[in-house]
Structures are given as structure tokens and as C-alpha cells.
Image (cartoon, rainbow, N blue to C red):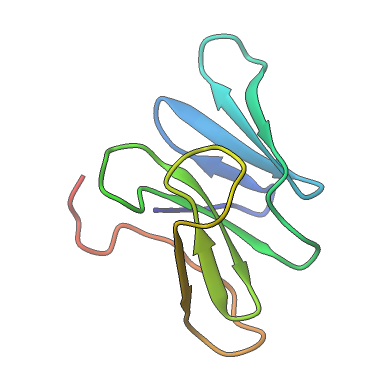
Length: 101
């Protein structure tokens, strides 16, 4: 799981995500151009990325109104995981909490 920095860049290997003006951009380290563009957020959403299903691939997610909405694929569609956590005003923080790769 990764947290986007203040520039809305979410690092991952061998690719990275950029979150800009409510759009996710997925870049491989090969071309330098966005390989995928995903409109998956609303104003006020907090972007997060992580390997939500332990398949070794980081995918997109958002934190909206104390709910996480997480996708298992880097495509548009309904969230695969939705759960409430926190209170209004909280900021999402993603991380590798169990230390496993």
C-alpha cells in the first residue's frame, strides 16, 4: 500500500501513479507517457494506492467521507472493497503494515 505525496505522486515498482485534477495516470518506466488514464475520483477524495488483494500489483483507491473504495485492477469500475474507517476530516495513510513484500 502506498500513500501519495504532496505532489500527488504515488510510487510503486516498476511503475508509478500520478493523481492530477481528479484523474489517475499510470506510467510504466518504459515510455515516459501515461499508459492508462482513469477518472475514478470526486472533489475532496483522498487518493491511495496499494496491493489490496496480495497479487503483487498496486492498484488505485480513494478515501471518501470516511470510506475506503479500493479497486483490484487499474481500470474504471465499481470498488472491489468498500469499508468505513475513521471520522470526518481524517486523512488516509497507506502503508505496508505487516512488512511482507
